[in-house]
Image 1: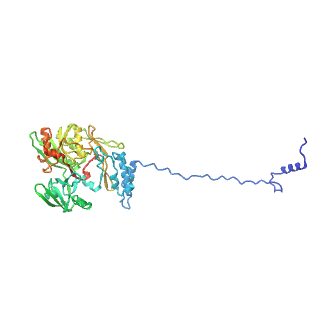
Image 2 (image 1 turned 180 degrees about the horizontal axis):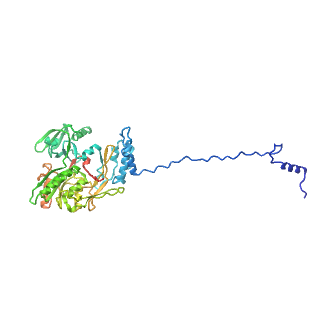
Image 3 (image 1 turned 90 degrees about the horizontal axis):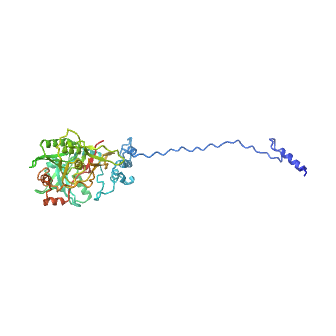
Length: 494
């Protein structure tokens, strides 16, 4: 076939051959558009991301909120809020509380006062008998705790007992401090309280009136005058006017030697495990040692506790070198806390000792904490401890107090066990011989029921079985009226 050579075909080929030049456009010719130079877009740079701060450890949280106080002065370097004070408590309890796993999950913003939040932050569980597992959760102002630590008291020098029966307001005087306003006014053990500034003590129920009664019975400042009406069994009723004063309560009293057919027996009233007790305790044990006593009746019925270091020394002075270096008490903490070294019976010749293999302890519901540690510690070292009176309070626990923003807090941090590993006495120690507290006789009198019972147990080897003792043992217990800090065992090691 012949190639296509028509005139039209030749013209199209010529036109196509002329395309693509840079000259001026010509009619009927397509001129391409030159694109602009390529300019890349700037890269998108994301804003910097601040990594989240790691959560604070409990110890860091304690440090962060410690002493950040709501009432700090405006120029304070560490100003704070009430919620900061609560955050400190939450961190401190979460780290040191013995039962920290049982702490309730509380919204701290729902508590107006720091102390209210603290009071609620404890285990809600109960003991097998139905008592609160934690009965010893409390706080004081820093100033008040300092006074109690010194063994001081603002008041009249009266130790009160209350009847433990529900709905019965019946208070008796257990002891009167020698030289105190109460002693000068002639009050004595066994007197029953009837009126306070003319108001009926037993029958007053109005909350405001009850607060007035408490303010008169427990004055917080010296120089306040109040009238107390009392009844005495052998002389009827009478009224005294008392002026409150600051007192230093003697922790050791009534040290005496009782002569018996089986040899001399020592007796002393020991009231509080405060640091100031060491010197009079040492003097009392030295006097009993020098008198050649064969046995000791240690009266702890109103002793609510205190320093474990003092308790260990008392126990050592009872038992002597045979227990030196043994564990008096090992304080067991939670699993977050580094274990403590045990508190040992001191191995020293500086303390006088009686070198006894047995001791008689007068006890009751007011015998608590460090006093119970004496019982448990001696038993762990195979010393026979005979309890005479009533069931002890049941507190095998100890604290290291924490002060923050002017208040000192006490939360259970340790359970104490003896040399044999025993410390399970949250229900208290049962008496060897049950007997009711006898307010008709002075403490240290051989006719006083608890002391007389102990002497009978020592001589006969059995408990007396008189109807009076049996009836007394069934009566509601008389419980000391005192502040929570009087029922405390303090592990004072740092």
